[in-house]
Length: 302
Ligand SMILES: [Zn+2]
Figure 1 (tube, rainbow, N blue to C red):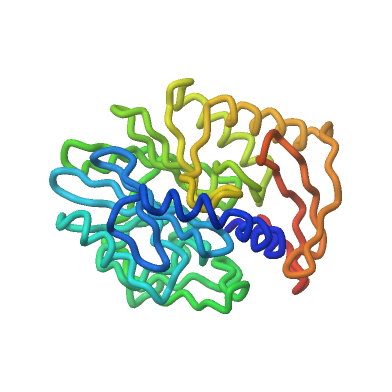
Figure 2 (tube, rainbow, N blue to C red):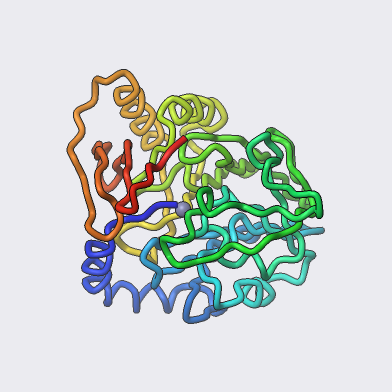
């Protein structure tokens, strides 16, 4: 979940009317009003939601045997799999980067759902085999959204490799934004799909200590040539949110300063959602929000 200030987001979107039109023409022809497809390689597609205030980006990996969506989009009304079916007819599965509502909008459209297997995710499995994620975890009330119960076709262990046929990705557990946050690393092509662990905008820290550890672990997996894609867009919602190794280092360095009380933050609140929080600027458009208290009285974090 990454909730940027609605007012700022809407204002910036208006200014972006022209680039939107230009880039829309360049994107793949498989479009719908809610989604915009970007073909990144012959096996990787980014599916953005430029009209949604959180500018979510989900990713489609296409192997020779199987296709895998990393996140299901935020939109509950439009069926994202119809778009996927214009790109590939391979057996399709979906793995959420974590269990926040904005990554589970299209969940009900997938028959084959994968999930990271940790003590945290295991607690949501009930006797009938369905996973029921409580609102306190998925936070769907923010968008008046309910996450339906779902069955898991395959549990993935941290560090397990998912083989899609000629294309392998390793699941990396990266807690910090949430306890269940995961990323996917394709070692052959040196691509990291980072979910909400890393994106070039406002990062929400649910647990700074975990985040520092996960950033350190990520930096050991990736290198200066790694292509990194995140799950939320930038000021330009039609641009695939990519990052560099140096960005990740800068985020890690700032997160360490926050953890050790050496960073200077500023108070941030948003009348629509956030009662109070601390905002730390990292570089360019990247910032970190900590100690978030929502207007409904709940604190964000674990
Ligand atoms: Zn999110």
